[in-house]
Image (cartoon, rainbow, N blue to C red):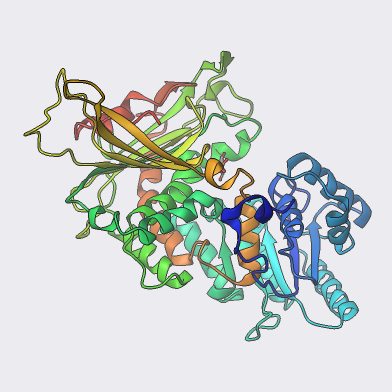
Length: 512
Ligand code: BG6
């Protein structure tokens, strides 16, 4: 049964957001992300009838794979990773238009072969299609791919016409300010900015998109959304998983690059930005950039605005877990952080004096991403905290995942013949109201890129604004090596130095 039939709240939602005829080319087609996220996303868009009638999927990778084998790998990926079971009809429609091209990323001739393959598809179809290139490879080959898309004429194809080529670029978008700048320059030498879709998959999450709706479609929040009423804001992106088999990548990245610079900063920008003048991609991204630029430079010294740590051996869900330094592929002297936290000051009219705390880590007590807005306490003239009055500051929290929803902590009278108070939690849960078959972030993002809506993608200047803030911290940490690296037991909520960041302002981390 279609979701709209099951859930009355979904009635009236557009089933056809109008993607034009498209060929999606995935670079890195035999990679992990393709199997786990991209193929299932394409399949679910097909299931929901959101792919254009003229849709083609082309895998591109170094490994020679016959078309049939690539289709079989794709259907295995759907069986293993899709949120819906494989439906033979839906898949056979997509599979009949799925093919594979083998070639190196630095081989111009292979890109010419790809261009000829797409020209053939257009000839068979008897019309042009837009070309959407999805770069889902390790970052070391981003540049040759971009250059060869330029050299083979694929980047400029149909430029100035509605079916122009587009490119989606996966993270990591650079490893610091200089490399992000260089990558932007390479991109701009080949593509125009409106052809470029830089991915941050957090922006595709339903609850992250809902932040805009909650903030700007409800009149009650905006008057309170400032330094007069808000005491502090905490943004947590905690993971239960450790580095697993990704040690090689993670050693080069660390938590600040992997999670804070992108996902957590995006949550911050959407929470704190000014209302955009319209819901256009550019209007929203202008506000996010303004906000990121208003954040004061961070003091990276010990006791300053940042904390970093590695997980040590601990217990998770009743099982003993190794420490980071004992994980496969990790140097015993590693200076890579698996946890990072920071205290930010935003120097604008709305937020001056309100601390924003950000934290993210692996192997933490619970998987949870949330944004908690802590309001100021009312004057204690009537109800002062004490024996009879158990009082809490009002906290509005957006739970991004899991158990997506929104809750508000309020103080309430306990029923009885005397006046006692107790904090209670008022909650809204998406699953209860709308059902739980929420689209995966990648479905929304692939569809938006096909349609040409860049709202949920990062603009080049946005990426740079975030790197401008993070790079001095990364440089200071690289210089310090392991000096100043704290640790936390796997399965805990993080290290003492992170608590100390908040203690300076008499705050404590919430336990979400
Ligand atoms: C990725 C990081 O961007 O996000 C991973 O590279 C992390 O290290 C993942 O595990 C978390 O994403 P999600 O959607 O599971 O919260």
